[in-house]
Amino acid sequence: MTVCTGNICRSPMAEIVLRDRFEAAGLGDAVQVDSTGVSDEEHGNPVDRRARTVLAEHGYPVGDGHRARQVTRDDVGSRDLVLAMTARHAQALRNLAGRGQADPAIRMYRSFDPATEGASEQQLDIADPWYGGPEDFEECLAEIEAAADGVVDFVRAELGVSSDA
Image 1 (cartoon, rainbow, N blue to C red):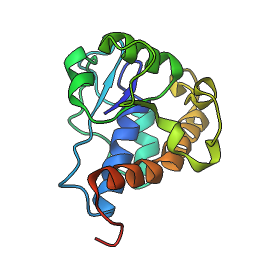
Image 2 (image 1 turned 90 degrees about the vertical axis):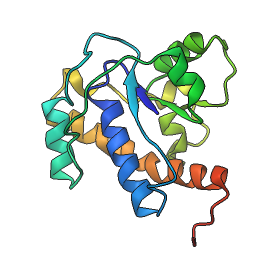
Image 3 (image 1 turned 120 degrees about the vertical axis):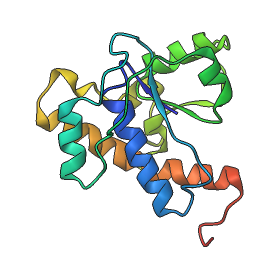
Image 4 (image 1 turned 180 degrees about the vertical axis):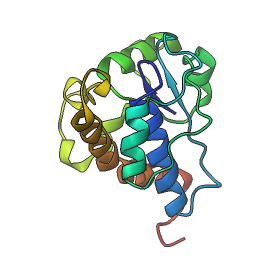
């Protein structure tokens, strides 16, 4: 599960990219990907139109049918991997799960980008494109794409599936 603030920009973009990558890796039937937000401010809203635009320009589905929803304690507890878009989201997820600082299932999304190796949690934030223009959505998508293959490789290893399968 990918998690951002309102579940209309970053986390649904990451959900869509990850589904695409898992499908390409032959894991589409083995992995379920969804997204939520730490806030309920956008509850029921579709993917932001600017996020839809950048996704379409890069050949991805645009999230038709997506409706924003707030993450629950059950969501966090039932997922094998919860990917936070910012350190603030990661802490909110840990608090929600009641696990304080240590929860191996909660990871920073960008920690799977090889270019960020050794970065602190705070250095791994994906900036909120909501307040910016098209270039901010492009940058957001680029950061999501840069980590996506690392997420796929991690999940493949967790499932014990070779990349040759």
